[in-house]
Image 1 (cartoon, one colour):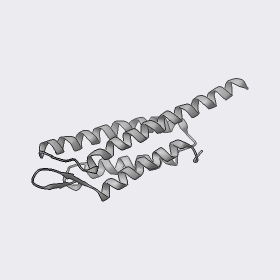
Image 2 (cartoon, one colour):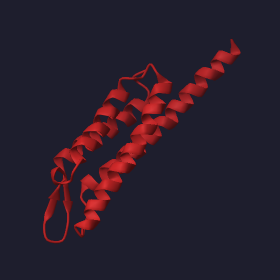
Image 3 (cartoon, helix red, strand yellow):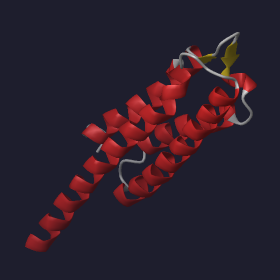
Image 4 (cartoon, one colour):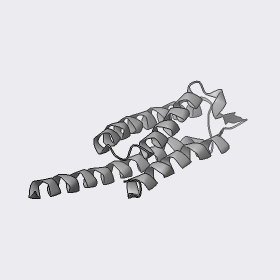
Length: 130
């Protein structure tokens, strides 16, 4: 149901992506890099946010939520790797919030998947009793 804890985790993952649009800077030595300057960054961030928001309302299909959550985690790690690559190439000094955002999405999605698995086990155990 929509009032479960994994809904909150998916919402926090979406909020992290949304916040990265407002704080979309990577601080580097001479200048500041905006995420819009990194190829594919807006597409990957948009995908992460869209998938988290879509998964938020996919609460009736727990197995589909788990599968989508796994893909979200993989996409989050890929996005983080891309951001780190451009951050290191430009010679960064102090990372901005945009660099940490994909890791927050991965953490919140992992917590949501953990709770979805608990719900799935609970439903399966109640089916055995019948």
